Amino acid sequence: MTAASVDPGGPQSTTRATRTKALLLINRNARHGQSDARAALEVLARRGFDVLEEHVDQPRQMSRTIRRARGRVDAVIIGGGDGTLNMAADGLVDVQLPLGILPMGTANDLARTLGIPTHLAAAADVIARGHQKRIDLGWVNGRHFFNVATVGLGAAVTRRLSRERKSRWGSLAYLFAAAQVVVHARPFAAHIRAGGETLRVRTVQITIGNGRHYGGGMTVDETARIDDGMLDLISLEVEHWWQIVRLLPSLRRGTLSGAPHVRTLCGREFEVRTVKKRRRIRVTADGEISGRTPAHFRIVPQALAVFVPVEPATEG
Image (tube, rainbow, N blue to C red; front, side):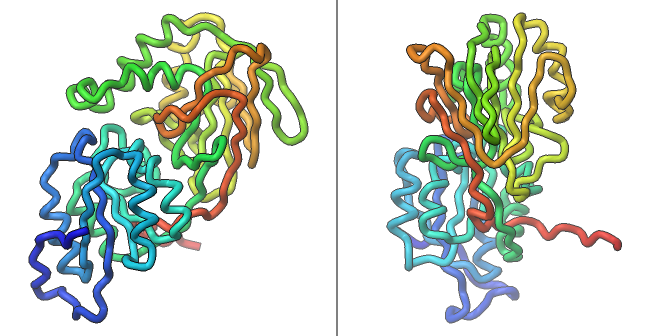
């Protein structure tokens, strides 16, 4: 672990005794992972941060690296996209250090949910100001997630999202991948257990949302919050691909409640099982493959502190 080479001088510098030590992990394979982060590091240095950058060869090493830093730093700053943050989630929960986000991915849905700007220097300023809020995390089969988990089409979309496609097309890569997958979608029968009741559905995808945004700009629900202590479930119960096309405006706006061929539920815990036990469907969490059904989902309230912009005061 080495200190980032930035000049800590300037009129806003603080004394060494009061400086904040932060572990910086950047996924250099993220869409903007090769971006010049010097402006962001300079903002942090001027505002009292000693930034210690550790290189991580694979995103899956994120949580292990964070755990090793326990007791040596006061915060963790991650540069990358939603998949990178997902790989760090378990380690962040374990060490309970506040998280700073430098959005360097393709979709940056968590940053959008939290109102964190995508300009790196502006995102660093959010961290430097020090305002934190505790957010919920989702949990599926032993792993935490920030935005959404899916059963069904999500895994096929993930497999088509190559690094080259995301680098070339940005958020549009999600739309192109989804379009290729949807035309070949076939419904599957599943049981959804919620609140002591079991529902049998025929669906092409079940989405369980914790935050508000996912999939490069889709909205789980227009009223969803990442600190409301609830999960939102959406089941797309269509028979033909063109029925999904009709739902696209509602998927973007988060207004699927009451839409045809859609089931929406809200709760703290869900279980999804396929009716045919031999047909185990892939599960994704924040765009990362996370096993297969049966899948047990639950909310972990107030799981983590994150540096966020100060919310404007509301008039009473």
